[in-house]
Amino acid sequence: MKNKRKLAILALVAVPSLIYTAPTTSASAADITGHVKTAYIYNNTYYYNYNVANVDRLISNINDTTASFQTNLEAAIKAYNELTETEKQYVTNYSTLSNHQQTRVAYRKLAAQIDEKLASVEPTSVNYYQNVIETKDWYNTLNAAQKTFVSAESQKILTSYITPNTSVDKVINKIQLLNSSRITFHQDVADARAELNALRRFTYVYLPAGIEKTLLDAEQLVAKDKAAAKDVENAIAALSPKTSTAQDVQAAKTAFEALTPVQQQLVPNVWTLVDFVNGKYDLPTKGNGTKTPILSDTAAIPGKITAMTKNKNTYTAKINVADTENNTERFVLTTKSNMTVIIPPLGTLLNEDTGVMEIKITKSSNRITFQATLNKKPVEFEANMEIIIDNLSQNASIVRTYDSGKQVPADYTVEGSRHFIQTNTPGSFQINY
Image (tube, rainbow, N blue to C red; front, side, top):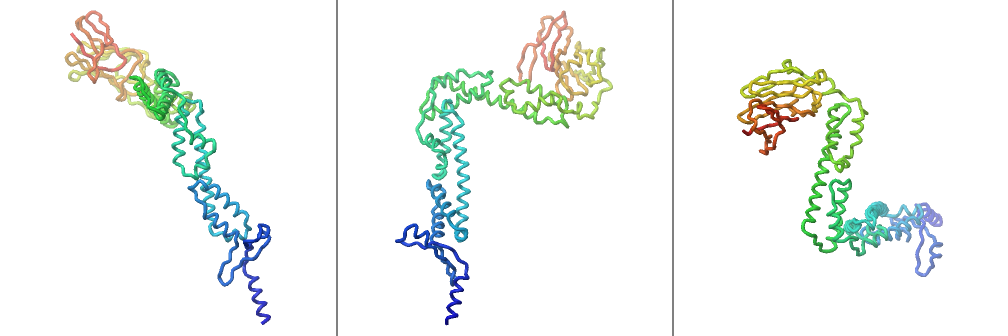
């Protein structure tokens, strides 16, 4: 009997144990801390101490949508950290505590973004009120727990009543001073719109007739500027050291130079174009670097008179365009219909391509259609091409016509019975007798 009792005691001591503090209603905190007993597993029954049970309860009380989230989370973390390593193994919902800690990290990042947005506009700026309103709208989408992570200074601003630091007169004056040629035009338009929106969120605003239309027209110009700049941006982005030629670079450069200063500042990759223009890359030659243009054996000879080929009432001629061709002499092309076409030297040709230029001129009744293309694209010269028409009355006048039906006076001179039409691009002309 004595031996059996010893074995029972040894069995109790040999099982895994957990240090715990047994609470009493009458003991002081010092008594509880100093009164340590062993928790154990006996007959498949688990005995947990008060510290572990308290941490389980504190974790269960955490709600990540309420204003007490931070306070409850800190209390649970503090209680958990005070457990012994053995006690920590018996906390049943530690994963929940870990998840809440990750949530706290996300809430802090969100709050930092709101603080940064609110601080991004100075209180003296005309856009300050609008920025506060936008930030307040964002702040109001947060739950109570998320709001507690926003700084106290930001919360004070976002929960207070503010008014725009502008006036109707200031807005009207700002709109009237909008100037599309100023470098700051786009920012001026944005500021005017922001001020007007700020006033309208605060009170009813009446603008004199035409003022808001001026702002709308300015906003349309901004949209057009952005579209034009985007086209050039895309053209620059398409440039490649391996496939782009000097002609491609020149086309992008010409497109950029055609933009207004306001539009040019909207092209973000202009320095890429500068690199190409300055010869940073060893580009292929014309075409793809290896292609030789196919020229015509019957092309007009520069500096000499060439009879154009007739087909019904249309006359045609060909001109070879290549680095090997004479680019200092003009071409004289004649017809049997009292018309002569003068093509200036190829050195004045603005098209950067090579190949065969096709010249066509058709006279039907009192209408003349003049076509000049290189690789199916209309040509353009720095100097004027000339169409000489013989045997016309000195009183005859010539107008240039467009596909839309619009007519404008043509650029021409008269010498006796001859009319000289000057143009640096192809076109259609009508003779009025």
